[in-house]
Length: 193
Image (cartoon, rainbow, N blue to C red; front, side, top):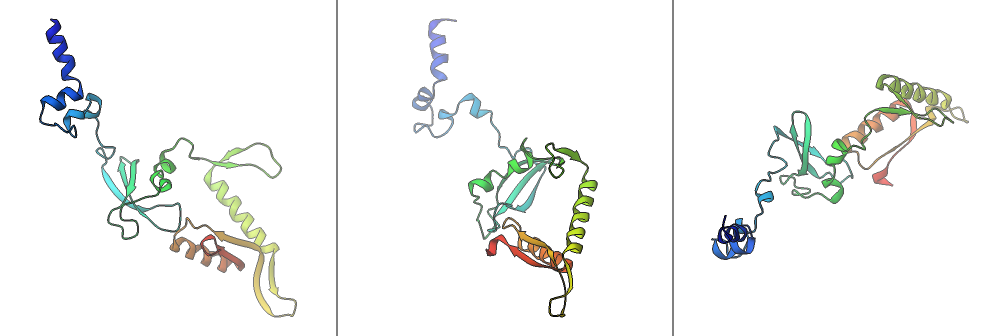
C-alpha cells in the first residue's frame, strides 16, 4: 500500500474530512458518526413487549413504559401518553430499571433474630407465617373490648400503620381496610403527614 492510499484511507476516517467532502457539511449526520456509534442499537430494540406501569418512588404517579424481553426488563422510560408526566421521569424514576435489574436488589428473605448478630435466609412461606403470627400476637396483647368507662370499643392499641407515599391510592386504601378490620386505630399515611 502506497503512502497516498494510506493517507487517503486515514483521511476518510476523520469526521472533518467526511464533513468537508461529503453531503453533511454541518456534521450533524453520518459525517460525525464513528464506526462504534454506527453499530449501536437502541436498548429497546430487542423488546418483545411493552408493559405500562407507574413509577414507585413518590405519590405523583408518573406513568412508565417497561420494555420486556423474555420476562427480563430491558429498559423503563416515561410514557408520553400520560397526562401526569407527559413522558418525563425524574432522575429517580429514570433509574427505576435498577430496582428490578440491579445487583444490589434483595432477592431472598433475610431474618435476624432479636438481639442476634447474624442474618439468615428464610423461605417466603416461613417469613410470611412469622409476620402473621406477630401481627395476631400484637393485636391480642393490645386488645380492648371496653374502655375505662365501660363503653364497648373493640379495638387494639398494639398495632399501627404508617403507609408510604410510594404506594398508590388503591394500595393505601387496602392497607387502611386491613388495619381497620384488625381493630387498629393509629392508621396514617406519609402523604398526609
